[in-house]
Image (cartoon, rainbow, N blue to C red; front, side, top):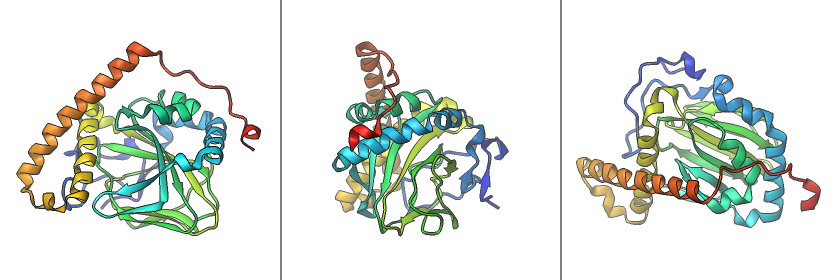
Length: 277
């Protein structure tokens, strides 16, 4: 039986095959719906810097909300009420977005095995349909930034288990399970999500990043060209493997370029909310 919540160390340490959302077959593995992330190495740095992270995100949002793009769920729909500003996507750095939030960039870049960092916005009266993430190889940590109501007014449900966000508090989800989220209030809900490679897959970080980015690209193509859904599974598997190798080369090239062109990001001064008013 899959548990509703567990610490990563409480999960059976024997690695299971990593699940990827390459078809409509749902994940049926051992991982719980939620994680107690108190023991993850990234938790302390996020908690210690929460106020500065919050201030920088809110300042940016109040001044540049139009730059935060609608998110989309491949194979299903695009909901303009769910918007995201991604700094890192499975190891690929988004330079402009990192420049928008330099303090946040400096914090998340300290987290061991961090692969994705995204500011997630749920506009008033928005409901995200049930969907799954790209892989079971990561833990997605949520940090509440601006939460306009308590559960069940604002919430998330993973594998049938619901909960809400709290400002400054963290929890993790297994994004391979079906999950959905909603905001029934008249105000925006803002959260930071950070993906880290699960400890048992730490030596497969590059492969997971390459496969997840390749998978997202393939899903986007399939959404626009539905005929590709008819490809036999073995063909899809070969395309996925080949595309992931190409993506890994792109990520490695970007990292080499960034190391050559600039030092590691330094924390900005604490943002001043008064400047945005």
